[in-house]
Image (cartoon, rainbow, N blue to C red):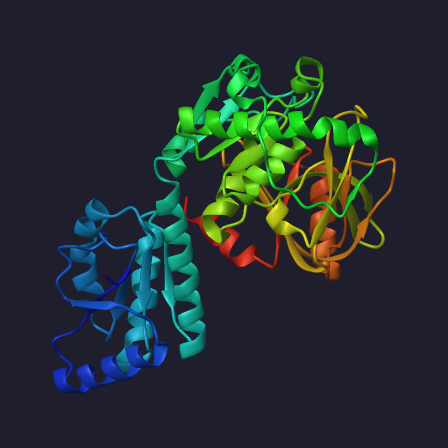
Length: 408
């Protein structure tokens, strides 16, 4: 079954055979898998992506009459596909201007075949991600850490815009399961290149046990994602959740730290779009003159690294922390606010993995790129940040992230 439906608008003044020939040539050149619905809009909005192919001029009045039906059937932005032949671009511009007057989002897809195809691929990717998010459950295990004074979440806005439900889970459930005998001899296959101290080796059995406890809790509450007030574990079980979170994220289960819901939500969006959760980290140093930023945390998904070492958790000096090494190259830094009203996206280049003893164990040293990008990012971080945690994703993905957030 194709995921893209194309509907057509055609003026009766144009020769049908000529228009059909242009339609075939144009749609073939784009090289996408689609179903051509023609002028029958009765199932508009039922596929992941609906496109309206404006084939000729003189179609503005037809569209105006059709618009109330389209708005009843779909809340998607209206995408107008046009070849530019037979005054179709001019008609599309008039239609888009009318949509804007009505407060309806829309876009004209016009240009080279390769540009149009790339744009459609992005729109489909975003539609698929939004579809995946519907009905997902994000667990909040314990309350956000006390120092996250700005990192609150609006559960109503999140559910209304994304279809994601926040689920409160008492952290006592983690502790009860941790003390359950069936988890005491839990195993987990891991392959660190180095274990820093004997204390880390002795802490590994309980760190592995926490993985199975949290995995079981995910199943019990039917969670797609969670964030945990992990510092409570330091005193409660004298260990950390870093190893468990690194493995759970690699398993495809979004697992965030410190009860930070906006960051976990950012990771969930990344998972839905790209199939990878990203790395939750704190900016620890920013150089406004060079545009270099270092982000660090004591965990990183195992499927984001070329290798990793095990060390203690940085702040506490106990348990198991992860020093992961990402492949150098393009990265994206990303964050949404807890009400989805604000977001930040910046592309950069990971230039090195650091191993400073006075920072959390995984440390990424990133060049924020061009002069304009640096200025934008530095201004954001130093004058108007969205909390402290941010998410680092391998690759350059600003286009898809911006499109997804513009679709909400």
